[in-house]
Length: 363
Image 1 (tube, rainbow, N blue to C red):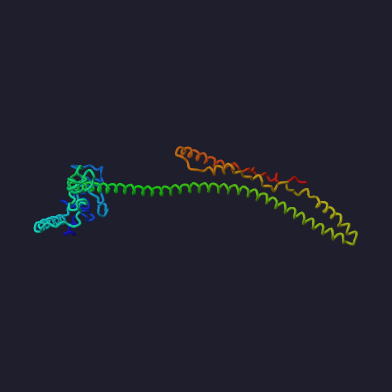
Image 2 (tube, rainbow, N blue to C red):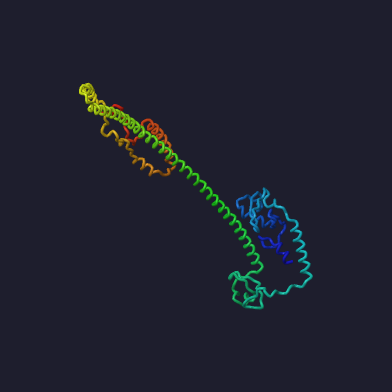
């Protein structure tokens, strides 16, 4: 019977279930009144009617913490557990019949007894000292001037208070659990927003890298164009000098052969035109010469001091600067178009001189 009684105890009021008994979706049972108290503590802002919540809501089972979702009927929408109610009726009848047929049980040896009056049971409660005591202590002992109350009344009051406090703690736990869920959701949103902002920052820097790569390519192509033009001119001039050197070498070879001619008449016939050719070959005035400093490329000097300072000052903007940033982006776009037509502003690179100015005057 004791084991059966333990199974019929409500986890809220700690008494045998009072009718009607409702069964939760998790198969645990509660008194309807206790279920309503827990539900009202978990949903303090829902409308009530006659002290009971009638609209839908939710609360957690005090036994297993399973969440119970109610429909618009509230607690009254929970199904009654008629089997448990019938067992309670049978248990009460069995307890009544057994108590009437059996003599009163003897006092258990572990029943609390008064420490001062060892033969007296503790049967009253001293309200002044907040401690249980016996009748002899009230009449003759330390509590004769104190206010006392029946132990049963104080027991019921404190049990009711403890039940209410437990229900309040269950409600507070629900609220704290809700706050924890909100904090977890906030952490998730922060991580998501952080990832999105990092992606945007990386995208902005990639765009900046692309602009710098384009400018580097354009500037190096400009230097390479002048390099190719100068090299082509020098290579052509080199070919002319090689051709002149080759013709002079042939004339020298012919002169050596003429010097070896034993016949004076033949020598004289050959020497005069040869001397004319030597005179013409010795004249190099028709060959161009390279100007001093022609190989210099220092006029392609780039100064990125302002750009370096601008890059170091890159930072996040405030909301008030968003309009200014859009305006600056439009101005930058116009400036980039102008630079695309006229070249970089910090690159000192005058236009290439004409071919005639690259060549020295004939000496």
